[in-house]
Length: 258
Image 1 (spheres, one colour):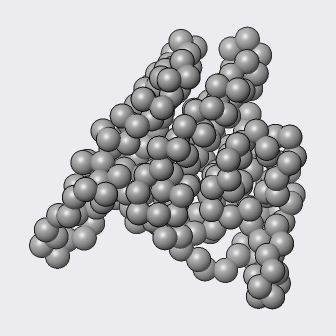
Image 2 (tube, helix red, strand yellow):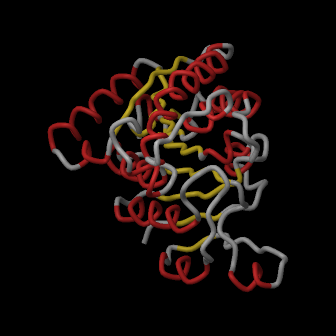
C-alpha cells in the first residue's frame, strides 16, 4: 500500500506491446498507458518496468556487428533508451504526469545495500508524484537481452517494493490452455494459484520483438507469488487494458497468491 492508502501497481510493458507488434514504437500505445494512469491516479500509484529500447533504436539505426550480436544489442539499447524515455516523458507530461528513469541490473538485487537504495529511491519518487520508469541497464548487463524481456526484472522489483499487484502486459489474452491452442481456438486460463499447472499448459513460444515467451511470465508470477503478490497477465495491445481488466471487461489470466 502506498501513500494516502493508494494501492501500488507495478506495470510491466513488453516490446511487443510498445510496438503494437510492428517494427516501430507506438506513441499511441504510450499515450494509452498514460491516459489510464491519469484516470486511476486517485486510487493507484504506478511503477513501470518497460522494454523497448532496442526496438526504438532499430527504427533508425543499423550497426555493424563484427560477429558479436549481444554487443550490438547492448549498443542499440544505449542508443534507444534516451529516445524511449523522451517518448514516455512527452506523452505523460501532456496529462500532467511526471516521469523518472531508473536503470537496474540483476546484480543490484543481490546486494543488500543496493536493494535498500533502489527501494528508498523509488519510494521518494513515488511519494513526490513521479512515476519511475525502469529498464534494465542493457549496456552493462546481458540478462534481459538473453533471458526474457524484463519479465523477471518486473517481478523482482515488485517483490522488493512489496507492491499490491503486478500487471504484465503482453500480446495475448493471458495464458491459453494447451488444448485450445492445439485446437486453434484459444481459451484463456482465467484464474489459478497453481504455477505448475500453468507450466504444463504453455508451449514454447517466443514473441517477435521480446526475448521471452510465456515461460518467463510464469517464472515472474512465481517470484511474485512467493512475495504474496497477485499477478495479472493481460493483453496490452488493446486500448484501456488496465482499466478494463480492473472492471472485468476483458479476458486475462489472474495468478493469485496461495
